[in-house]
Length: 235
Figure 1: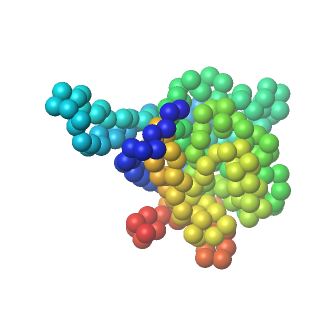
Figure 2 (figure 1 turned 90 degrees about the horizontal axis):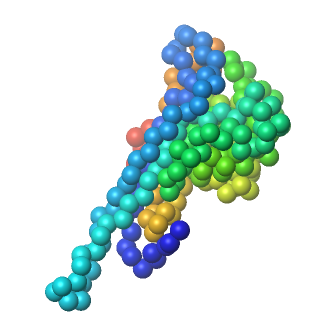
Figure 3 (figure 1 turned 180 degrees about the vertical axis):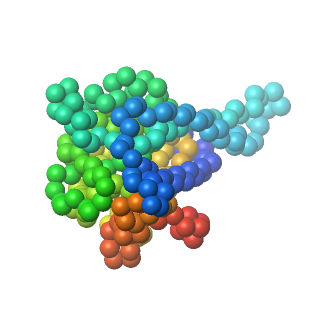
């Protein structure tokens, strides 16, 4: 893709909050759907950068735009793992990848990429072997949020493995990290000379089984997920 390093870019910020698979307080968490995620593509248009006109007849500079394809929850766990074992990592996105055709693909990765750790005491626990992180790239997903109520289903070990697998695959991530600063840090992605910043945070209510997302909140010296608050988003 052509870059334009000498053209002043318009920064854009996208904040994604998730209540992934969360149930209202007092109600059990529902079994996740196996249907394909909906895809929403949005086009962001940068304002044209003014520049001196060399001659009175020079054509005006045109604006540039990029397309961000955002999907909902992406779960690569359970039966999906069995299918990938047989049909390859690209299998989950084989039919929908052509729809995620923007400059940047974004999704909520609903579960850790790990084979380690003990299951957290809660209703449902998801995980996927780290080697299948490449599935995201096959679906044109270049950025994921990890801020959801499944990312620490297998504890800190699961989160640590997830971060490593995504980094090794080249998928950018937001919404969780080794500490609060990392969890709340943006991922800045370049697309056609434009800088696009992504943030991720989670605001799920307490679940019927007694699980509270607050138990996973990233601290200054402890890993976890980014919890949504006005201060954390505007900082």
